Length: 212
Ligand SMILES: NC(=O)C1=CN([C@@H]2O[C@H](COP(=O)(O)OP(=O)(O)OC[C@H]3O[C@@H](n4cnc5c(N)ncnc54)[C@H](O)[C@@H]3O)[C@@H](O)[C@H]2O)[C@H](O)CC1
Ligand SMILES: [K+]
Image (cartoon, rainbow, N blue to C red; front, side, top):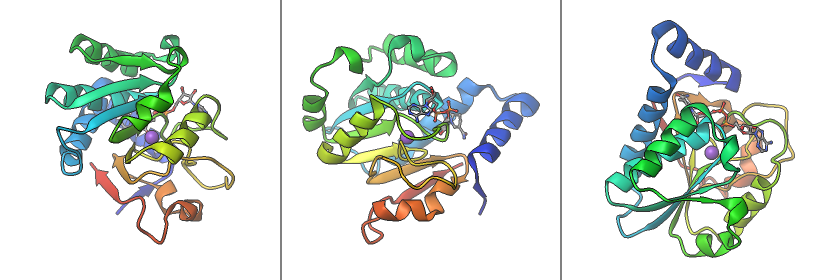
């Protein structure tokens, strides 16, 4: 079993893209699809599902997941936690595919009732931020993470719970208290550090599924 730091994961992704030649969009598609395949064991067609998508590739995974679920007739919409201009590259490509498939994207800064959306949903998919996190969560992510932790019925995090430091060295942070976490590629070190313990609730929280 290999456990990687964020840098090691980026190095492996870089090798996969530059040396092997697998396009980043395809990596994202594979990650999102693999997660959806496993996720179907814990979600239902009648669930109201919201994907919270951030600005980076973690958000891109979220758009792939949203499109895959939408195309399979799940009740899913996306809440984008950053302005449109921040979505770029592979994530923008997958956002556009989701929109062209008829998907709904709600921009958080234009939506005064995010609280009502969360209260009215059964499953939150947390694709706000992954191993690209640097330092303490900034607004509006911090406020949204607090809201999800207080209000969300059931939360599934993509790759790592948003806000959790990817590596060692940080102890004071706010992070999503996920009921389930699907890791992409390789196991991330953050899953095994002491920083995770406050979120564990006697080991019951954070079941992990690791996807190759
Ligand atoms: N391993 C794989 O096979 C694949 C993994 N993927 C996913 O990509 C993310 C990592 O993507 P990256 O774009 O590098 O970073 P993030 O999406 O995690 O975040 C970057 C984003 O976040 C902003 N940001 C950074 N720090 C903060 C902060 N403290 N507060 C608020 N916002 C912050 C920053 O400005 C960027 O915009 C990985 O976890 C996987 O989920 C890919 O799909 C490829 C395949
Ligand atoms: K996440």
